[in-house]
Image 1 (cartoon, each protein chain N blue to C red):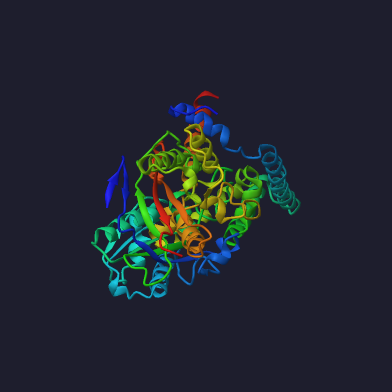
Image 2: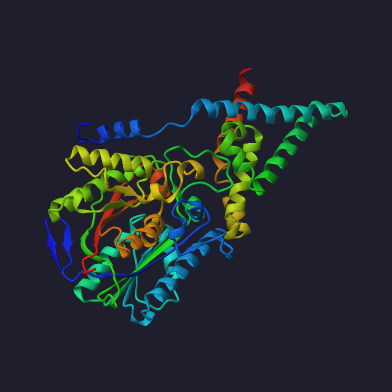
Length: 341
Length: 147
């Protein structure tokens, strides 16, 4: 493992993504990617009494599912990196309190899933761990309650607002592929905090796009790679507005990503039929779309090189009320099929 | 497109990129739904007068019935759909006020009846009450001393 350029880390023993798992809520289950998710819930409560308990259950069950799928006993998972959007990350810590794996609670807003993968892969590459679990969750109802208004309030959502994805994504990183065909994490580019002064909490895509641009360009400069190296460049939840901004701004900087770039917030919902305005958002947006869709594409070798970049808006409801602008962040990992076919 | 360097350039660019709400359609829907709610109120008012109630009593009955209906529709998860369609049309009449109190009461019931329902019930309507009551006090003082 060594540092390249300004902020990228080259993983010399690239960890395998041994297994992933995803659970999504009922609205996501009506979206275009529904068939790729491991489990689709029929209602948002999932038999619990509160939204918060439901979210904890989602991450707990998803973590159990990914461990079961991987074939590795939970006692052999050395560390767990998890986080979510609720205050003090209670979904993760409450959901995983019985799991008995050393736990790092992390907060990177909607960038948490890739932040966990960055840290986890460094642990595995360095030899500090053989197997690491990365997990995240978000829930539309608990997020609305914490960040916006009660669900039953009869207000109108602005066209630029995004829809928090209900669900959980989880992945197990390992130093062995157990003889299976697994994609590997080759580079890690942690992002800087970038704040271009956007204050509108209903326009997160625009607030996060400059951070995504910064990480994207830094990754290319540090690694010497070109956008065309990747079969897919995927951001977390920039949505329709942020996606267009990133694409256009990257072009002005000399990076053309039009042909291979997409965003999980755009892919998750059918904008017109599902009335989700600017697209999906939340930790689970990239968590579930990667775990459900892109991981399968990698395993089936339909794509072989992907730059996965999760974006986060580092704000809370108090900072918004105090008129602060929204700092954005974006963390990237390069995931590649490098073993022989 | 030229490269964006400053915050102001970026904010102007974001403004151009962000879609506006469909104002004409929203205004039209707000107009007819708001009008319909007020017409229902007027119908109830006229009915009360027909039954022999005076003006003050009739107004009170109208308020009680509209608040009751709005609260019920909020609990049935219908009012938010009307609100999404009609915007200010259902928000500005007393129905919106009822909805803004009942919706947090439902949402925060999970934190208990005292700190949840009781403590959070006015989180949305609170500012309306504070500034509405303050304004009425000021107007009252002006009326008392100067008019």
